[in-house]
Amino acid sequence: MHWLDRSIRGALRSWLKMPEDTPVTYYHAEMADGGLGLALLSQTVPLMRSKRLGRLGHSDDPVILAMVEYVAAQPGLQRHLQAKKYGDSLIKHQGDVPCCPGWPTPSVS
Image (cartoon, rainbow, N blue to C red; front, side, top):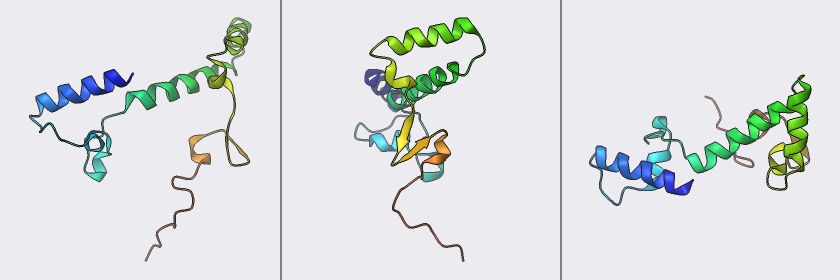
């Protein structure tokens, strides 16, 4: 997946006539932060796969549930179906994890 990220950045660099030493973070930073907002596929795709497999476990269809049990028995795919934890709490939604743990929150004046 990393090669695909590099290929996309290379094509984008060519199309936009960007210098060779453009930082990788510029491509992937949010547009509001001054970047191009390009998704990092090597991180995005595994998260999407994990989320999709996690949702299948809540299906009412017995065939789908049997498939999920089969996938859960495969060593390489078990991590996608396991519950994720942050500290001592179970994560059910991305909003359950603070953006920057330990960082002070800005005060509104």
